[in-house]
Image (cartoon, rainbow, N blue to C red; front, top):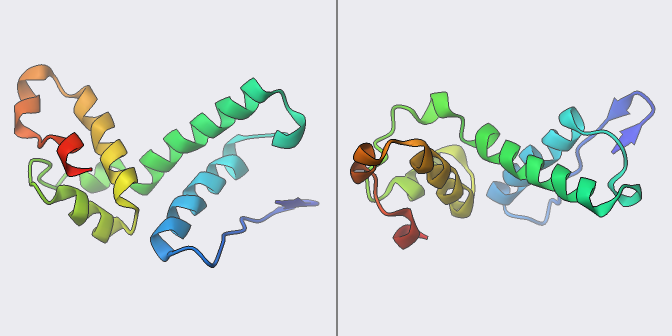
Amino acid sequence: MKVGKFQEIVLDSRLPYIHQREQFFHELCHAVRHAGRQSFMPYSFYELQERDARHFTLYASLPTHMINDYNLSNPAIIDQLSYDFMIPRKVCIERLEKIKSRIVPSDKSNLINLRKEG
């Protein structure tokens, strides 16, 4: 929400804290990276901004430099990241899927099957 020169992020206080954190990162992306009002823009631009906010949320809530020291092959990694970063499990699963997709095929055997975790 913008008021003059000021911007604010409004979160739903009825949501559990971990969902508020997810919502915060999503809205932070809109505040720092997007312009315009979504209600007045073409639907394709709206979709683009939402996709970008989702991508931003994954990387801002679970930054690579902070998860480098975790053992990603640990069967409990999803729960561990969710607990440590206070982010919903589904966000952790999606983030680890992104990491897994960037690892060369021979190294993938060291990671757990994330689809079974979800």
